[in-house]
Length: 69
Image (cartoon, rainbow, N blue to C red; front, side):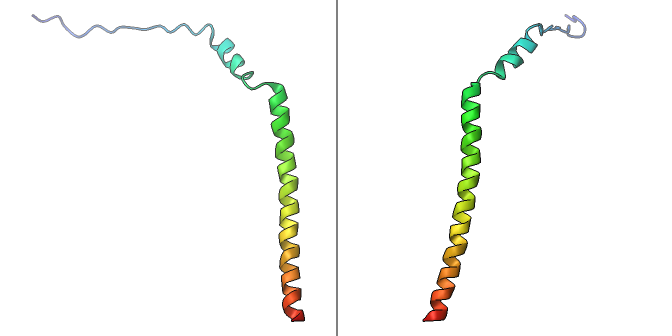
């Protein structure tokens, strides 16, 4: 039996709460934690500067030791 072309099933998605959902996602990580991570990030940048300078000084000291020996 020939029923003709298959019927299309249309699914209409309810997107009325999408905005609410995405807004809620912006509050998953508490503001307090974000501030903490920002502070830690800034401290790590400073620590990296300190370690880089120490490495430079170590290289200079090694070169001076070789010159003096």
